[in-house]
Length: 95
Image (cartoon, rainbow, N blue to C red; front, top):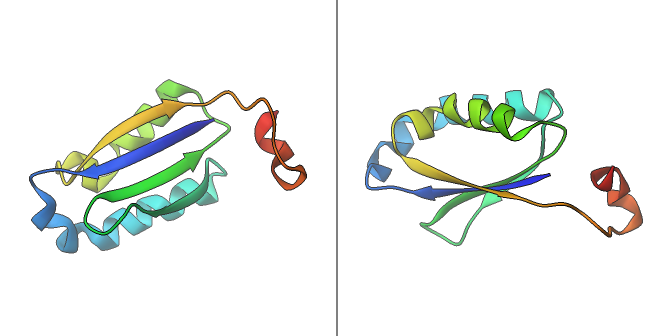
């Protein structure tokens, strides 16, 4: 499982122009079953994604296709997590 932090970069001003394409990219990640959660970091910092069911190279390739990443609106940080314990509704993430 991966926690992906998308921290705004110096090209943050381009975000409004690319928002529709970025949202389409997010939708594709959810439809593929790879993204399980997406949301904002505190105002002005960027966003975060919880991803599962893909390898790190697959996550890196998916991130490279994000219009925000391609235009340096955000810089991704990938944190790999090996779940050891979950609450029952999230047990599928420990598999």
